[in-house]
Image (tube, rainbow, N blue to C red; front, side, top):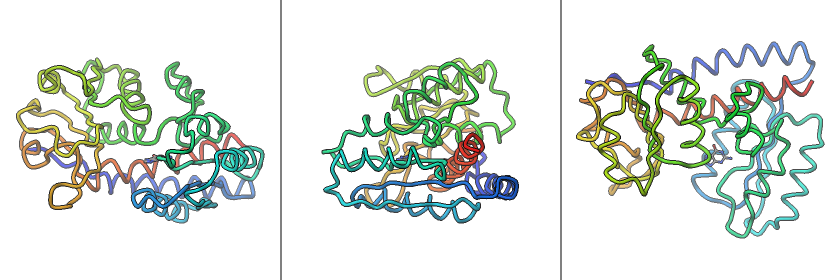
Amino acid sequence: MGKIIDGKAIATALQDRLREQIAYFSMTVGRKPKLAVIMVGEDPASTIYVRNKIRACEAVGVNSEAYRLAESTEQSYLEELVRKLNEDRSVDGILVQLPLPSHLNSKKIITLIDPKKDVDGFSEVNLGSLLLDDKKGLYSCTPLGIIQLIRSTGVELAGKHAVVVGRSNEVGKPIALMLLQHNCTVTICHSKTMDLASYTRTADILVVAVGKSKLVTGDMVKEGAIVIDVGINRDAEGKLCGDVDFASVMPKAGYITPVPGGVGPMTIAMLMANTLKAAKGNV
Ligand code: GUN
């Protein structure tokens, strides 16, 4: 029977530590760290994520500035705003909530963010830093949180076979690099992988980040594996569910993250950690 990795509790403990570190920063530097959050349009999921990010800022002592822009916002306006925030010394972190409406060029916007303020770690410079294992970079929050969750189990990572399902720039690719840095043997699977189960069954650590409800079932998981579910989907009844079929995987896994209450809270905690890291580099 798998032990549940309580992401909510681990994130809360991390936020408690961050609150102290941020208080120390604010006292010594004479100002709080500041995060600017830009959202364009009214995507319901994004609205909730942005609200949770702003709340997390309040909870740990980070100043936040939310820019909620109309769906019709033009590329040039958004670029001008990012340039202005790049130059504003009082702003430590800039986050552009994705997805942007389809008429906007997300890649161009992300590239425009000063890498030192790119608290999402999505820019080319920061992804390059991760590839080169340069500790000074800002790394993608969800993969950072996943590593913390895996480490919370106390299981040694070195030499383990980690299978990542999904190859996104935000999760799949960066978590594969981080697991490699922790000396795992890493396999990346994706939508074109033939016989997915033949790979997932050999995973000591299985990270699933594809956005497909209950894609991974119990028969696809090795006994005792650590299973990290990054998916946030709705099942046929409209209930929140992950990419992993919790009911069938739980009895086989050694450890498993629930949805909700697994990876999600850690992503936001790591965003606060990245904001503090960016602020320390901006004094
Ligand atoms: N949309 C969904 N998750 C994220 C995230 O972590 N960062 C940003 N910027 N947009 C998102």
